[in-house]
Image 1 (cartoon, rainbow, N blue to C red):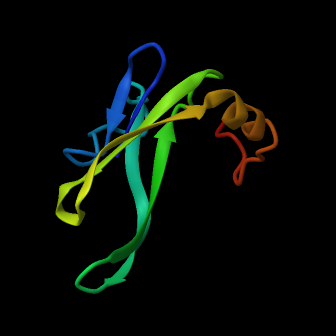
Image 2: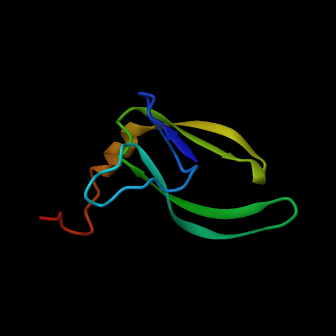
Length: 101
């Protein structure tokens, strides 16, 4: 799984979670697998779910979501998404915890 912003910056989940401490933000962008699991299948299908955390949110312009899963027969697939729609939705988000002081 990966993303590519319009300015060419990329992030992927290949190679595992990047090292960083909680006092210094990592070099953006960062894409981290944040959950999911389960799965089932048969001889001709696999069903699974994954959740990802992307930081920062993409800019309010088009960006690419890129997926490849050779084990499951998924070829390299690129889909363009509307960053403006994500930015607009983020305007309605509310924090779970107060900002640290």
